[in-house]
Length: 317
Ligand code: NDP
Image (cartoon, rainbow, N blue to C red; front, side, top):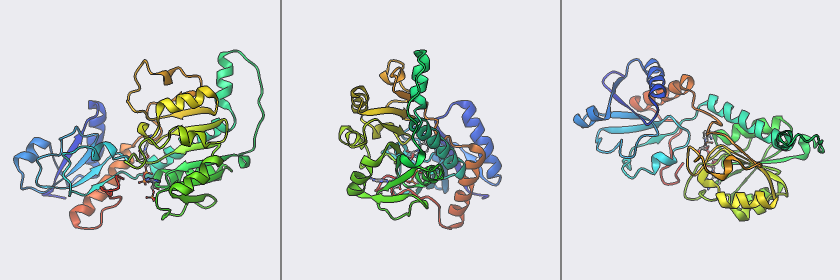
């Protein structure tokens, strides 16, 4: 990749940024890395950017910018930057190691909800010895919202565990994993929600999915259902969730993503007995594998070959 300039734009803590720089440099030894100021000073030079939470405006004023590779799977924050050049192709991160981590988190949450392990945790705090009924996996419906890289990996693991699995997507174009049922559109969602003893959200945040998990859809779940939000905080209407939990129509929620991150110290989710909080850690991007994924895409862009996992800017994912 000699002669091609690569920009690393990341709003990360210094140690994390250094780790990424190390793995990216190892995966792309032939690249010539520069910072945004240097790229702006030489506007004619073609360059690509590798980004992780870049500050808004970080990619503005770079006429040579030809490609943006995100190190994150979700690109909602990146696309929300109005200064992102409109015609530059953007690719998101699809890394089997991240999908595997997401499948693990999904399985842990579904299993804990199905077997009532969060309820046992609550009772431990109360020093209460009480055994509840035990249901078989094949009696439990788990619905995964989103049938992409994350949703497919999660659904496969849930099928292997013996659950009755439904997968919801926009188009229905990608078949669900063997053993799962795939449905699409509003009708599909209306059919799936009443079967979701556990509802797992793995959608991207777009104008069409923002606020999807509100009172009406939560009320369509079976009584006492569990909710697992691993997509984005803005998919969920927080007040509606609290209401459903407090009225007992929803049993428990496992939340990894929030409207405001980090979750503010005074937020009611921290101490709610029926909410389990994770710090946006369901599936971290692993620099050891993701740097190679990014490198392969950057080499494809440089060689004029097709770029993988391009974002459809109009759809927002
Ligand atoms: P993909 O782009 O591979 O898949 C997105 C899926 O969502 C597709 O099946 C798509 O449908 C479906 N979808 C999109 N819009 C709609 C809609 N309006 N109605 C119904 N279905 C819709 O994304 P990934 O699977 O890689 O990632 C999904 C999201 O997971 C990320 O955007 C991010 O927000 C979140 N994530 C969270 C992490 C965490 O640690 N908490 C880590 C990584 C990702 P179709 O197949 O028809 O296109």
